[in-house]
Length: 416
Image (cartoon, rainbow, N blue to C red; front, side):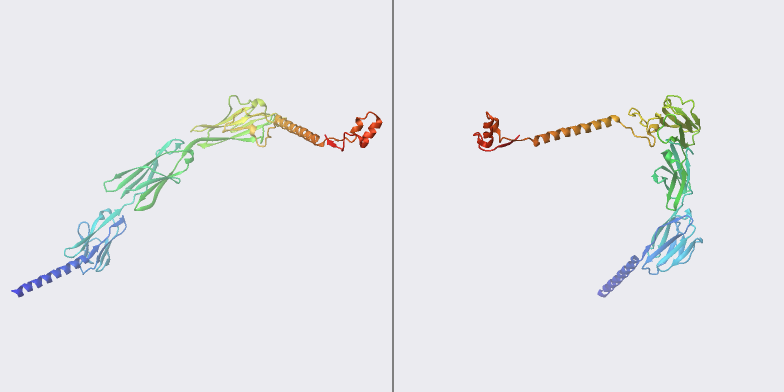
């Protein structure tokens, strides 16, 4: 009885040890694989890897649980699947010319008890077609708004779109639409206000997608703007004087080019003998009655612009221009009084005042110096013969002059 009990215990212990050993062996076989992203039309590779394999069989199944490879044999009749590597620790298979129908979860299976499985998800990336960029208006006037749209069609996953205007990045508003075949179309719209500086600047639509790089489209802005007008003085180089001639040229640039350039005199008529030839104005034998503001006006389809020239005719015999403190000159105008090389105004009253001050200062210095020398130079007197002045007669005066008077014991000298 004791022997049978001991034998049963030994068998049970042996069975537990066997199962424990088997269990440890199964847990030690680690089956792993990786997810795969592949661009449509390219090749995907699936790798089933086993750590510490005990000669268990590895096989690969497709998303429909059909066996692609059993060890190194391919039961599935799809020649796009090719064996890359087979060993006790790895089964690696390639799938060429991947399409959207190949997307899904593939199963790496290890024949153990129970079987182990690891999953590899194949994601098929479909790049968008060439982007299409359009604008609401082909030509836009400065100061107005325009809208551009960019479309990226037939991509998976949806593309993202950014905008560039020159070196400046802009953000548009995007909408995403899913089509029946699990593809996506993305449309981005950009609204901007243009200026004349935007003429000829490229606006670029940049497509961002994991399946493609450097995909973009661009469109050059065409902006119309009013003319830029500038009056050029051909003659004279400096001040305008009576009897001389005046030549002015009006330079105007715009888009489109100005179709009309007019000369006029503000608040008056252009002199009757002035000659206007296109953009040039010529006036000969100037006199002061021609003084005033001359304006060049240029026009195109966008609008009008002008520039002013202020004419002031000086006397032929003087080089001193009159005071101009009451004249107001706009920033957009030129003034014939400010010609190159014109002499500076001389104020004779100021010069006279300076001379008078200098003379007055010199006179004051002379008076002060005279008083100074008069006080310190003085006059030298002696009183040695003072007794002779008080004598009654000549003899007494002689006696007193020889020092015999009693009023003075010593000789005294004074400075006055």
